[in-house]
Picture 1: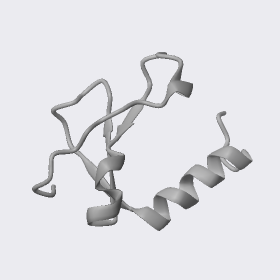
Picture 2: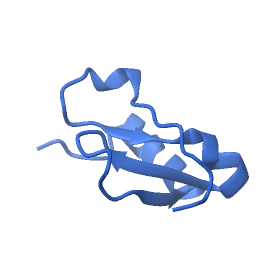
Picture 3: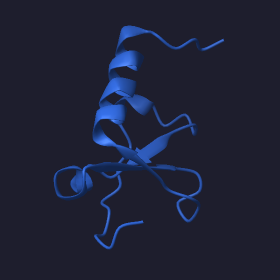
Picture 4: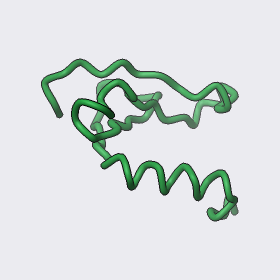
Length: 69
């Protein structure tokens, strides 16, 4: 993990259903990374995703490229 303190947030679209991730967008500019963690386990592991990969993922979700079945 980087030395900067991540400011975590959950998307307003998550609906508080308990199956959410949190991201720390404040590290995008300074580190080129989007830290991601499980909202149910805030002390658990953090995955650092490069910005281009995260953008591709979000675009894929918006486009419906991922099956929910």
